[in-house]
Length: 60
Image 1: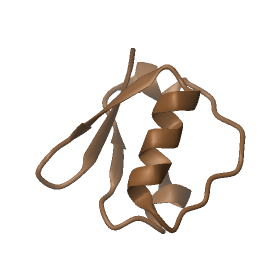
Image 2: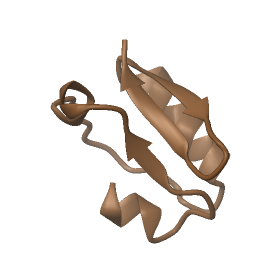
Image 3: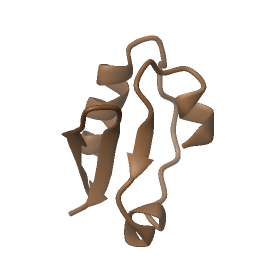
Image 4: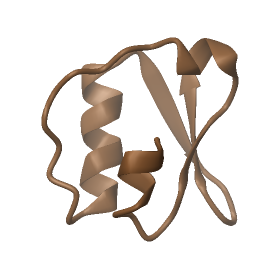
């Protein structure tokens, strides 16, 4: 997450330890943070929730 958050306007946060156990390997274009979130949701078993100050990623 730290690597992705260096390039996004809104920080991504993991909802819990279970979400942190999900592995992803691939290449993401980081110039559009909403596209990054959409890609992660499509490729990994997670959902996203926009909060006031972050985007929360949660395991399904």
